[in-house]
Image (cartoon, rainbow over all chains, first blue to last red; front, side, top):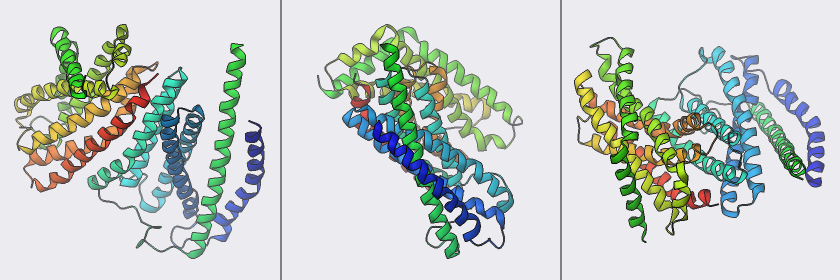
Length: 224
Length: 224
């Protein structure tokens, strides 16, 4: 608890410095895109949120497995905190995606595999968070949400594959091999943003864990 | 008691109970037929569109009426503490689970068997127009029963069970739904059946992965 408080302070101070750096790299360091112009700046936040969202769900997946093996409630705490944060980043992805797509592709939404699987991923973790809210008993809640955390995550590649077969893709592959080129400065800016988002994720995770612990303490005090 | 004996005892119990009460089949069957009728208002009567979306209507009717049935069967398990009693039995817990999967699957297959002639009557469409369709029916229904049984087990323990089941189940089931609908459409339209192979493989992979995963985690998520 003390350690978490300390970490929370350290990361809050760290965020104070790294977030402006991230904004500087995204808005000033990276060159302006020729065709898309300013709207392309959304790319740095959209892609970073997507990566952090997936990473958060991956952490939920790992922690769910660890919980089922060890039955230590701390893993359930981390899994649920990470899922909530992942859901926030996933929401950012789904909101910024259409904002960017409308001026560049001409439509808000296309049924492309990446978009559609992100949306389905979002629904799976909305279900996860709701399931936790609708259950009182903490052990059953931890066990059931661990099952969902594992099955939901394993399902992602299958969903992706099925949607890819269902509809041919038009999503540009910017980062993968053979995709459209990116200015080296843009790539640096993206990596900086990804780093900043990782710090945001860790700091949110620590703060959420602190809240979970405090809630538990309050509940214990109420029982006394 | 060995694994399969336990499994089939559960199936026998469920079949016997269903034959006596006919609760689940009656409720979901009427709902399924009603859905087929209501869905028919999507298109103009006798239009060519019928052939293109009949597969979708068939699987949607099975999915939604199946959710109704799954809720009902799991509720009757929970009433009177039957489920807790089953979990005390000195057999592998997953044998009980897979017994429930098989009995839910039997109910779904019965639904499908009754729906197939209905499509012949109302739309003059033969759903089973190719022998491979039997494999699709079997694999997709098994996959549905598999995740459906698990999530109905989870959702009946929550405060709002009717809402939780579809919310958890539908996003996970998307690969199966896409595969089942598209391969059914391939058979109905008389296109080259080669196109259906990938979908059948995908459904089989989904079934195998989730059978293995649930087999692995089931006793950990259910034990007290």
